[in-house]
Image (cartoon, rainbow, N blue to C red):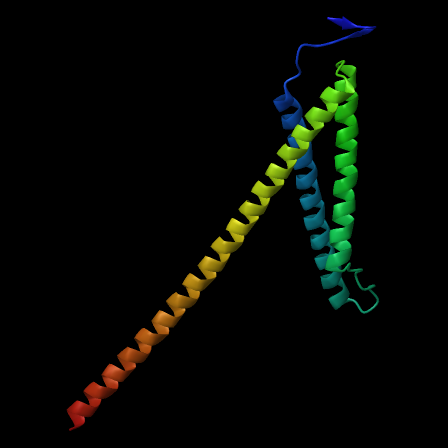
Amino acid sequence: VNFGNRPQHEHVAPSTMWGWAKQKAEAAAAEAARLKEQARALAQQASEYGAGTAAAPAPVELSAEELRAMQKQEEAEEKARINDEIRAAMEGAGLDSEEIARLQQDQAAAQREAEEAAWFAKEKARLESENARLETEATVEAAVAEEAAAEKAAAEAAALKAA
């Protein structure tokens, strides 16, 4: 089907675009995490080096707010770049602006769902960690109580023997 000089394609599967965008976003997030870990390791090495050498400069540490702001800016730039690539690909495929807008809305909804799923996964990990900590505390408290009970029983037995 032709509209003017532009061929109109039957349908571009939105799941293909979403999958591609999701892969790009996940790759960017993984790269950001890798770089963050690398920066932390380098800061640790610099700190250890500084502890052993009086002339070593102190490592520059950014506040948590500054790190979050930098990360948010990088994420926004990456999202904008991905959106530009998607728009160019869709225009190249002959989609009109209404179809592009609809697909981008679908993509934004999928992105929100992915972010929500990531939040739930992070929250689940936090709760599991808290649960493990509480279980460890309970185990330690039980062992202390058991030891105290054994000492008390031994003291009572010794008192009965002495009597």
